[in-house]
Image 1 (cartoon, rainbow, N blue to C red):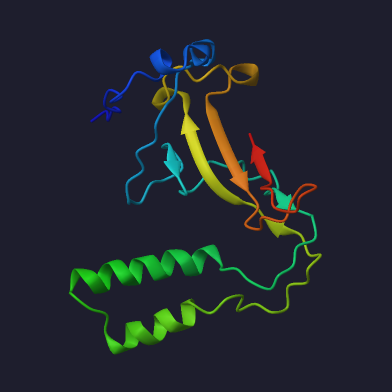
Image 2: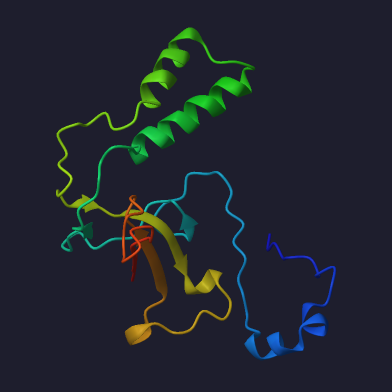
Length: 163
């Protein structure tokens, strides 16, 4: 089922005519929980990646004083979904959730160690109307990012890797 955005309650261009020149096509994403594989478009799902190509890394130094591992976040979400489907977590689940909630359980990572980027989105051209052609006729857009926000001159920017 294709989902579409409903019509706007106000005509923004009538209120601000100068914005008309900036109009463009937008694809609104409607992610849903699921278990996608690398053959479909997804947000936060697995990426189609060549086996002989190294995974991209962020090599900027980061203060490692806070943060969570992506596997811990996914596990916590699954435990919570299962628990609330039964009305409440078990005692074992409560212990596990407390452990998963601890920040940076891997203390041996140095502030200067390269860290793997996280797959944020994978969009196939067939799923995004109007997506411009990629280089050499590629039909896949992938966005990865560094899980730390201390990038750029302000040290508050995100580091995105687009393929």
